Length: 243
Image (cartoon, rainbow, N blue to C red; front, top):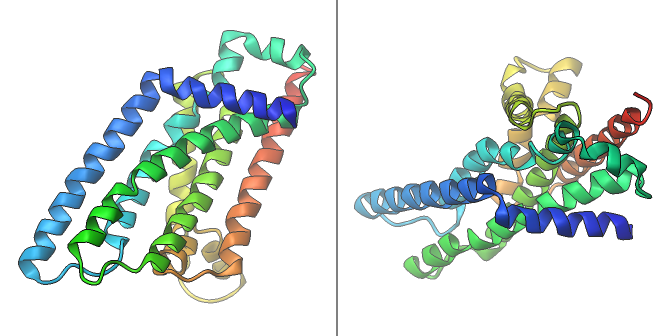
């Protein structure tokens, strides 16, 4: 586990010298700020601002869906493309430690972005009376963390299949978008439709966590998806030893 933490710290620090990470952060906060200003201005002209942080959370989740895959695209693909993967595989590091460390580094950086984004709910809290519902806000942020953990794990898995970072980024985005819209493909009730609904990223977030409702099935979904993706990624990395 010590090796995983060492890799995590290295990956976390790497984001602060990565132009892609800065581009993602700047895009996220600039666009989120613009959307926040437009939403608040519109609500002020039509009536009171709703006492919750959902006007921030919805926009933030949408932006993270499109940007997070590009934070994971280089995690393993760059190692494979540059030839450093062979060095890592010969080092005294287990495959799951490598994968877990990569994921933890990315998760730490995204967690930092989410912490900084808290400035918008704070501003919103000061603009409403008696203030926004902190309980709903905390549950919604918890839901975003769970979702981002799963997205980052999928990103690590997809990155393990590629040698080109950009290709890994777009492939991850494609997978996430499929999981995001798959719930809309369910046309009725029944076994297949229920399975399709259960696989939906958006339904698990917006139906409960976004509303401030903690449902164990949503937590199990995101945690299970995260663990499954990381386990599969470790198996893909292990298979490189025999190539």
